Amino acid sequence: MQKFLLIVLITLSGCTTNNNKNAQFEVERLNYIAGCSESGEFDENTCKCSFDYLVENFKTDFYKDPEVLDETNKKYSEFVVYSKKAYQLCTKK
Image (cartoon, rainbow, N blue to C red):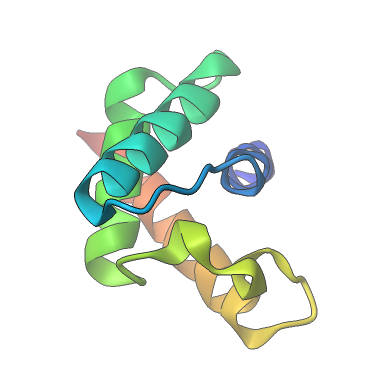
């Protein structure tokens, strides 16, 4: 579980920006999935599922929020809770 969170946080810190919202979203989604599955710990479907879960249930643009990566911020704690739930749900599929 901690490896999953570490992978997610590393992936988030490497996300790129783009002016076109739809294109940006797809780029961020692909970056997240690639970073998550690259470790070999999780398959691509688990990573897709976790990204989609976080977008739907946590925050639509969580990958752009620097407060999500700040361990002293409340958003980080919320993110950890949602990430754990995403991991549990997505590995059961």
